[in-house]
Amino acid sequence: MSLVVVGTMAFDAIETPFGKSDKIVGGAATYIAWSASNFTNSVKQISVVGGDFPKKELKLLEARGVILDGVEIKEKEKSFFWSGRYHLDMNTRDTLDTQLNVLANFTPVVPELYQDCEFLMLGNLVPALQLSVIEQLKNRPKLVVLDTMNFWMETAMGDLEKVLKKVDVLLINDSEARQLSGQYSLVAAAKTILEMGPKYLVIKKGEHGALLFHEEKVFFAPALPLEMVFDPTGAGDTFAGGFIGYLAKTKDISFENMKSAIIVGSALASFCVEKFGTTRLKELSKADIDDRIQQFKELTKFEIELE
Amino acid sequence: MSLVVVGTMAFDAIETPFGKSDKIVGGAATYIAWSASNFTNSVKQISVVGGDFPKKELKLLEARGVILDGVEIKEKEKSFFWSGRYHLDMNTRDTLDTQLNVLANFTPVVPELYQDCEFLMLGNLVPALQLSVIEQLKNRPKLVVLDTMNFWMETAMGDLEKVLKKVDVLLINDSEARQLSGQYSLVAAAKTILEMGPKYLVIKKGEHGALLFHEEKVFFAPALPLEMVFDPTGAGDTFAGGFIGYLAKTKDISFENMKSAIIVGSALASFCVEKFGTTRLKELSKADIDDRIQQFKELTKFEIELE
Image (cartoon, rainbow over all chains, first blue to last red; front, side, top):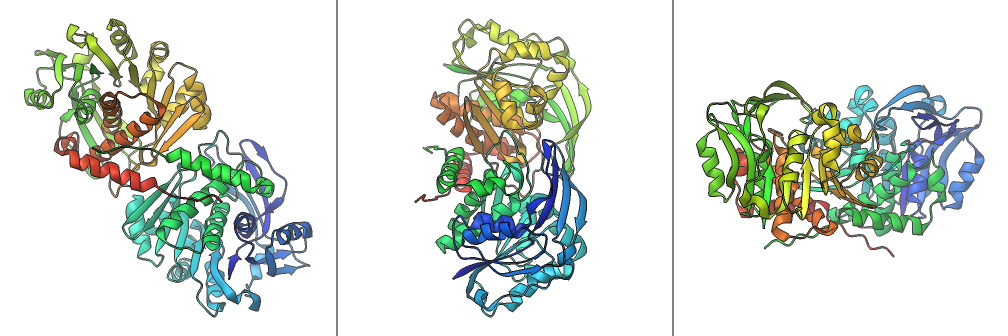
């Protein structure tokens, strides 16, 4: 049994209204691995980095039980780099620079060791590469979760449609759900998207929480009201990592357990935004996480006796 | 024991992306009375209308037990009129026309019969008039709830600050909370606003639900994900009516019961937006409301066992 994670491991440079980071370690798969490894020590990573990616960062992940056999290191090349500036609302951002570097010619190879994959987390990446990983697995995983973004809807919609047909759960944000479906109402958007392939749809709404749709059912997960969002980079990936990490740990992919997994993902994401990059995720104890999940329980609990 | 409601009873003409209404009956106090009277038959209304306001509408409210002794009818004048056009997001709107008419020289008079007021709902209105009602009551009500809007923050901030010092609960939307506090984060905004007078603050976020703040506590109420919001006019007033109607019925003003009251208000508001004006509110049965509240329960319920 294992959880296979596919995605970027990279460098980011971030500007927010509250500060500016140097070039720091980021990438979807990095955040997912840090988050998921709180729940399962069976994380098997697929990614690519350049010779500039700190070996120490790889060792820190290995120390948490993350297996890196599927992480290709191209010593003579540079890691993927993204730079962006967040607006005051922290939900919108401008990309300042993107350097593909190692990602330009990346062909993910699934190691033999990874063929026991039961849970597959396809982090945000070129849809054709996500598809290639699905196709390399000899047995279909129990659950395939896909993260993607508006950029691929604009540049690789054909491939994205193919991937959508092969996944169980799609994670996107509200504006992406509107773009993908052409529907403004999120309920209408969900209906359209659930006809494109996924059986479950999670719409992430940042500070407004998240919605889970499945057949005719819907679940509304709150976000923790925060006094300050310091850096939202990686929050969506951290959410994905908590979500699939919890599912991999509990091995229960019912709608009811997915509700719990979304709360766990939201709790992890609420830590991520407190400091730059992966800093806060590296400090977390089990007690921190349990306390935060307890806060989520209290946040939405109410009683009404109907006569 | 009674619930006194102060606010406009008026005409609206509404344009939404889905349709356009003729001049229809509206006004904050109209929506509040329709909503609150589902829970208590002790609603005592204070308002002013012109000779053009349909007598039939007044009779319909009386048939629900709403007492109209405090509603002044100026037969020779015209009722307050507002016309607006909603944008696609249904959260923002342009005012097309405002005709004060009877409201221009309105001086609310609290009838002697209303002096048993235990719950006071100050619907959106000129802050000086809201203040005048508070001052006319010989005994302070058990709970005073205030609704207001950005317009008064811009044109009557001095009076609004005076009212804020005399109320227990303030209901505003997210952009108004930001404007009133000068803070972007809603958590920071809530801290600032709770220092201005109210002990409880409800921030309404439309399709994103509502937040209740009190001391260090916070509650996150979901909104029902709707396929179509037909007309959002009066949703905030309907929310207020459900909120105070439930509190007046249960006579419990604890934080725990306010959480329930917010869910009830949200449930009522979710009906209001389904049709133009008060149409949907007039059709509701107790079973409809109970079913909707049950949906809210299911919407946010989750279980996570912490080890």
